[in-house]
Length: 321
Image (cartoon, rainbow, N blue to C red):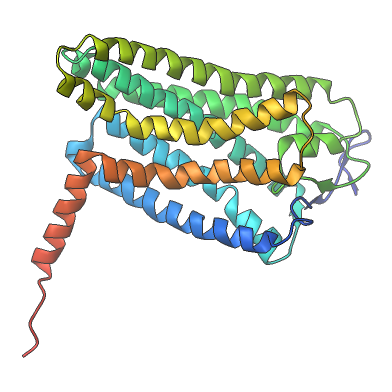
């Protein structure tokens, strides 16, 4: 250990030890690696299409592109470190690198539900105010909303992570998680960590309950507007524009809410099950998001079709004589 000052003891780093007792943990991480490669390819592809096609420079696809970027960084903050720990069998993480991973992961994890809120806001405006949609939800306004959400997450998570170097670590350095997780690292501190625990609990409640309430209220408004429509075709068309978003909301929130309830009510279960579930929920949504929006969104499907058509017309198949 190294003395950072006369009163604070900082270690050189931590050892990631969770899942090590789980059978075939390396195979599980290989599966996550495949999932990660698909996530990177699909999200980069989706971002590129939105960026280069001026027809997609509208609020809805600004929100979709924002979610794709969040997904990309969120998965990148986890999987390369897990490959190092479980496949290359190097589970030591230097102290400063641990803080960087912790900050990156929680910043973009907090951006995930907020990004889903932005998409529900866009659907709410589009369906409830169809005639005023373009004047209410402009590109400039959407850019302000996205910027505000990013600023909020960056600042609010910064305080939590920067409190870690103010603590002393004078005992075990084994982190019982699959990465440099905030709570498992905090458990290792040997001083008073009550302020950090209170802040972390408040943030957890904030980023689970507030987005869920917001999404619930927006969809109540959407359903009210849909049932006021005069024909079934209009109702069906309005609801189908929300399906991909609702699937992503379910994939992200259901595992987190279940694990949170189990922990809150003291239900005893295998810790590895909770870690695997949390890890999978953090990585499954970023993978599914671009696939859903590419397959179910008419504008992106047509853009992919036009790209393929152009590609084939520029490089036509030549007959071999």
